[in-house]
Length: 230
Ligand SMILES: Nc1nc2c(ncn2[C@@H]2O[C@H](COP(=O)(O)OP(=O)(O)OP(=O)(O)O)[C@@H](O)[C@H]2O)c(=O)[nH]1
Ligand SMILES: C=C(OP(=O)(O)O)C(=O)O
Image 1: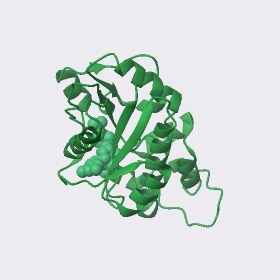
Image 2: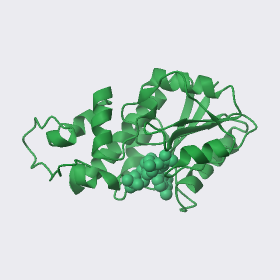
Image 3: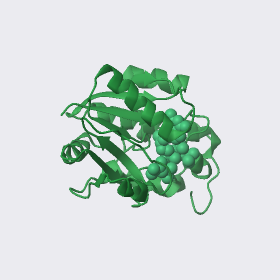
């Protein structure tokens, strides 16, 4: 099945605000962009992915993600995450009616194409399906096959909302890289332990060890890190 993925991305100046304390204000937008680049590169490398549309109004992110091969869709509704996703899915289906569509968060820097392929294969058996995040509270991926609307209900405790909406929860096989979203410094360390893509690896070299970095460049003053790291 040739999936069209819809990836939402906030303007970098506001993205990943919960990483401020771990990364510092200078690195937070760079990390948010690196996560998105690794997520989209991983998605585009997945055999079952036909194309990726990124819904964003961020000019720098749009330029860098387009260079990877993503289509950039302006966040025309400007009404939050679910409106952006519904808009992205509608833009995809205006071009390709009945396309199987999947919403994928942009904060999955450890994403492995082979694991995404397993998830999409499971999802292809249901009208709507989703994958819970690593904490089992949120959602990292929501799918709709031909004939079904995406009906996204992301944000916070979205796993319960997606379950209640009738979407099938994908629980096997194990796909830790697709579930590993990064909201906090602790999440970033968990992603680094799984192995992140090249863009995030490059940026985290500049972070202090407590935030997951190897701190081996020495050309930047490290940002302040708190004991919690988050
Ligand atoms: N286009 C678009 N994307 C959004 C919007 N709000 C959130 N997103 C994206 O949706 C995904 C999931 O959101 P979160 O994990 O909460 O990421 P975030 O909003 O950057 O993180 P926090 O600032 O810490 O809440 C991320 O890829 C965000 O960039 C929005 O209003 N428009
Ligand atoms: C967007 C979501 O959550 P968070 O903001 O916690 O990443 C979600 O899991 O639906």
